[in-house]
Amino acid sequence: MTYTTRMPLENNPESGQGRSWKSTLGVGDPVAAELRLSELGYRWQWREDQCLETTTPVLPAVIKLDSGEKSFFNQLIAAYLGWPGVKADPGATLRLGNGEAVSATFLQQVAELTAEFSFDVAWQSGDVALVDNHRVMHGRKPYQGGTQRIVLVTLSA
Image (tube, rainbow, N blue to C red; front, side, top):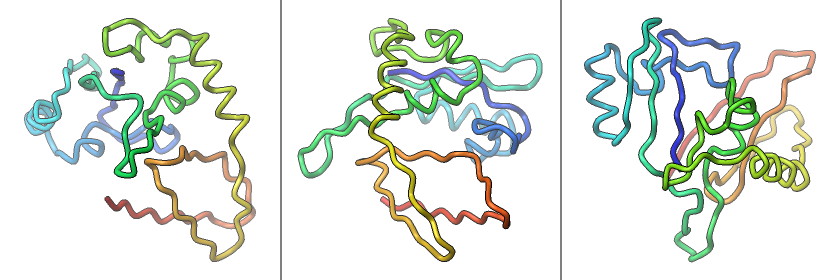
């Protein structure tokens, strides 16, 4: 799989995909951004509005875990359901390793399966959730509580 995305110059907290290229790449200027992208094997193009359009190298859609199990480990659903413009034209963003566009029909089927096998965590004040991102997909729905929501995240390998 390859993913093409546009990263804005500045963060947009209203967007699920609104991290700037500076935040995403952990850099402060275009030269450092290009160096980081080169290290990652990405292709990129600067846009007139100072957005950065990037395309990943070919990434596996399925990975093999240390246990020998396989995991459907990718961004297909997040991209299809949440990235701007992907539902209208998935081929502009999502491509198979051979360069062929991922079909909207396939993505819709995967989205329906995802919904069928999803569940909500019944949160209570003080709860902690541990999620192994290699084994399960996770997501979030809009927060509708009466108090301020605080989410703390730690990543570990």
